[in-house]
Length: 369
Figure 1 (spheres, rainbow, N blue to C red):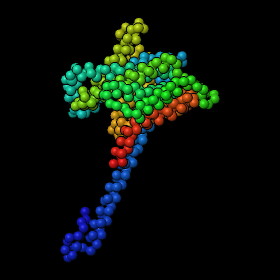
Figure 2: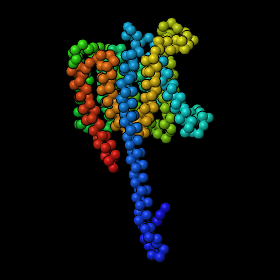
Figure 3: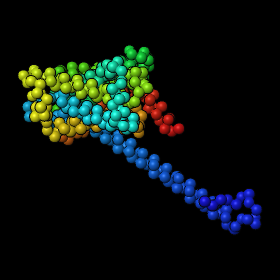
C-alpha cells in the first residue's frame, strides 16, 4: 500500500503522497474497527441467544413432564427409558467429538478401550447420581406444579455449598451463609400453601411426598456436582473432556437400562419383551420426545455456555428459568403465582446474587479489563 514520504528526498517524493498514505491508513483502521464491532455484536447476540435458550430449556423439563402425563396424572411410559435415550444421544455425540479430536474413529476407540478400569469405576458414582436425579426430576412433577419445582430445586445451592465446605474445607464466609439462609427461607415460603393472586386460576401445590423428593433431589445433585468437579480437576485432569463424558454417558445408559429392566421384571415381563421397541417406547407421545430432546440438548447447551460465557452465567440461566417456568405454568396450565411463591421468587433471586457476589464482581472486572 502507499507509504509515507517522511524521510525521503524531496526530489523522490511525489506531491500529495503523504496525504494519500494517511487516507489509506485511516481507511484501514476504520475497517478494522468496523470488523471488531461486528464481531463483538455477533458475540453478544450469540450470548443472548444461549442465555434465552438455556433458561427455556431448564423450564421446559418441568413443563414437558406435566404435558407428557396421562389423563389420570400418571406416566404411561418408563421414566428410565427417557433418561437412557437422552444419554445415548449424548454418548454418540461425545464419540463423534472424540474421534475428531483423535483424528479417526479407530483412534478414539483405542483410547477408550485402553482407559484404566479404575477411572471407569471413579466416574460410575456421579453417573449413577445424575441418572437418579434426572429420574427424580420427572417424578417430582407428579407431586407439585412445574413452577414450584423449579423454585425448590434451587435449594441445591444450599446443599452444594455445604457439601463443598465439607469436602474441600473452604470457608464460606458470612455473606455466603446469609445467602444460604435466604435460600432456605425462600424454599419454606414456596412450599407453604397460599391463595392464588388471580381469581379463576389453578392453585400452585406441593404435597408431603413432593417435599421429601425435593430434599433427596437437592442432596443427590450436590453430591454429584461436587464429586464430578473433583473428578475433572484431579482424576481426569490430563484427559480429554470428551473421554470423561463417554464414561459418564456409557455408565448412565447401563444404569438406566438396568432400572428399566428391573421395573419391567416387576411387571412380569421377560427380557426380550422389555427391550422390544414396542414396549421400550410404550406410552411415548410428542411431549416425551420433547423431554428426550431437551435432556440431550442440555449437555450441548452447557458446553456452549462454558465456551461463550463463564460459570456465573450458569447461575443466572438457572435463576431466570424460575421466572420462565412461572410464566409458562400460568399460560399453559393456569397456575397463577401465589403471594408466598412471589415472595419466595424474590428472596431466592436475592440469595443467589448474594451467595455468588464475589464471582459476579470477578467476572465483571475481568470483562472490563
